[in-house]
Structures are given as structure tokens and as C-alpha cells.
Length: 358
Image (cartoon, rainbow, N blue to C red; front, top):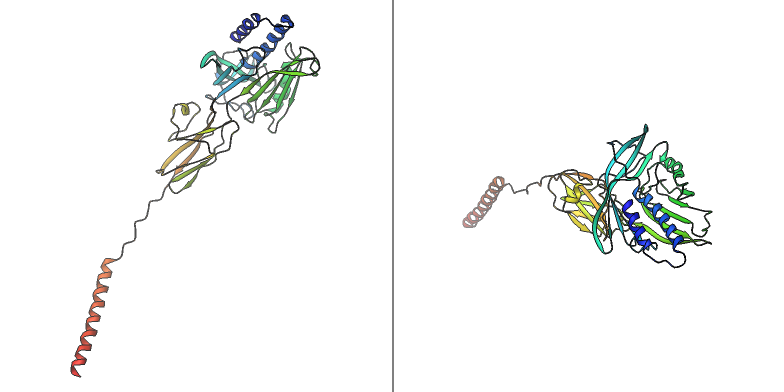
């Protein structure tokens, strides 16, 4: 978190802002400090691996999420910056005897002038979750699949940065919306507000930042998820020697990469594999397949980011051997021809003899 705050402070202190530099500077740092809490968490070190309950997070090691700051008016340097989280550890951490589920990621970033990824932090908390306490820090890039925990957790925003909050559940609970703000929600002058929406994987789809104008809210920036959702690969269908794959259309995806392997495809291994095919369609036919067991997976991508793989679909190909063509029974056919020929000769000889006698 420190690296980004230092960059922003230097940027703001060196700018001559008209109309009240002190007020704008203070509000800018507060807004970005709150943003940093959302993004970077507390940077705790994971302690041990654990098995998550079914209502916890859906992330897997190897999942990658790329976010981009859009129209970030508080800092030209931040505008267009992209941040990448590579999920590194899914585990439990213990603090004061309380067991927490947590998701950690390695953080890197780049800027419009240089799209090379620059490492920023290792094992950064994306979310810490306790079944009783709910979410226990200010980071909410991802949401656990437990609506009760989500609803009771947002008390963490009743602090210096945000005095009020509102969580609205989505169709699945964890794909809802969150609003946090200071003041009366009417947009008093220099008050701040953030509004976010989570997708059906429980991942932050976007976060919008606002500044109070005195009579409402003025949007001053947006953080947008650029990584498409994981495709849902259907059970493959075999037609002769061909395997037909289908999957769902994915928002923000322009290309799909199809992978095939004789061993399970993981979130880490697919990145080192050559795709079987690249297509803009939601179906692919793997042709002339030999007998054997195969694993298939699909990755959705766009110009900025690729999603993680879909759930593997294992399929065993069993092509029945072709039956040999039926050949005529030569051994029985030849005697038949001979028999017919002899009968014809007998008839001819009989007719000739009868004609001679007459």
C-alpha cells in the first residue's frame, strides 16, 4: 500500500490546484487511502493451507484478476493504471485464537506508458473472512459465498473513511452491490462515496468513486475488472471420431482458447500449454480423435486479460472398430456356376440330338 500512497502524495503536492489546494489535497489523500485499503488489504503473511467450506470463496490458486483505473480525476498518474492479482494462497490464518479463511494474491501493476508488469507485493490479502464475524478488514475485491457473513461484515466501514454502508443482495447473495459513504448520502460538499458491484463469481466487477458537490455526487473515477468470467464448459458430446465442445457466452470476452490434455488441466498448468484452438465462437469440434481419456478446458480472453480455466471436463473416447467389408462366398459361387453351365450344355445337346432324329 505504501508505494501507491507515496506516488500519489508526491503527485498531489507538486500540483498547483486552483480553488483550495489544501482541501483538495486532503480529500484526495483520504479518497485514495480508502481506495488503497480496498485494494491492498493489510499484507499479512499466510500461515497454513486449509480446506474451505462450501459457502466460502470460489477462487483457486492460479486465478488472475486484472483491474484498471478509468477516468481517475484525482491523479493523472493513476488514470489507466492496471493492477493484477495472481491468487497465491488459499488458507486459514489464526489470530487471537480466531480462525479466518483468507485469499492471498501477488500484486503487480503497470501504467499506460509501460504495460510491463511491475511486482508490488507478495501474499497481499484480498479478503479475510470468519464464519461468525464476517469480513474482517476493509478489502472487498472478492466476496465469500455466504450472504449472512457479507451482511454482518460491513460494519467495518463505519470508521474514519466511511460512516455509512448499504449492501443489496444479488440473485445469488454474493453477487450484490455495496455503497459506502460519508455524510447523509445526499452528497454534501467534499464528502466521499464508493459504489461497487460484484459478479456471479463473487468478484468485484467495478467500483466507482464519488466526491460530494453540496447537492449530489460527482463521479471522479472508476475501478473496472477487465478479466472475463470463467466459461462454463458443458459435458462433451461424441459423434463418431469427433468430440463436440460447447460453453456459455461470456461478457467482455472476445476470444476463447480451447485446451486438451491426457492429464487434468489446472489453473497453473494451462498457462504453459499451447491451446488446441482459438475461436470467437462458443463451440468447437475436436476431430479424428483416437481412443483414450482426455481432459478439456476453456479460457475466455480479451485484449487486456484472460480468465482462468473453466472446470475440467474429462471425456473417454471409445470408437468401435470398423467391421470388415462382406466378401462374396467364392467357394460356393464357383460350383453354382459350374452346375448351371452343365445344365445348359445338357439342354443344348438334347435339342441337337432330337433335331437329328427327326
